[in-house]
Image (cartoon, rainbow, N blue to C red; front, side):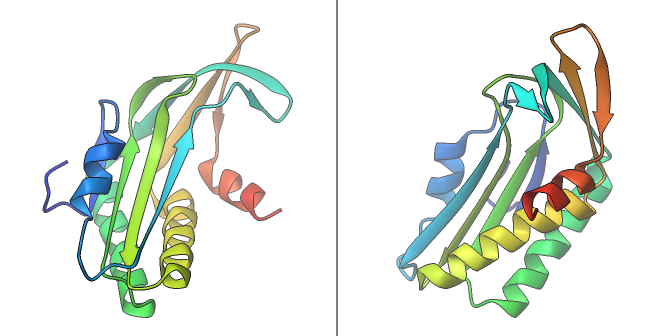
Length: 149
């Protein structure tokens, strides 16, 4: 991800330290970051790994649109997001969102809104590989609804 990108899709591990550093700004009183990791259990099933399929051109465009909407509605300085594609192992970072703002409340609100919208609006499909040898595609929009349940 270049310093000028605000949304990216990455086939390689997400460098969270570099992303956080890219948001450094002396006007900021707060940074809020979110990291979504691959966990070993989902809806009662043992998960061994994930695969993400992404339509990257649309995902990047829509991700940038989400961040622009948040910047219009909430007084933040900057935001960035990255979502992985391809095969991920347990513990890998699947998605990262960072927001800087003058105050913490705005940073928290903006970060939450960005990740929630990414889960609903981006063309990203998640395939879970289970320990029993089965696999299944998970609707990420349903995952976002779960977060609010």
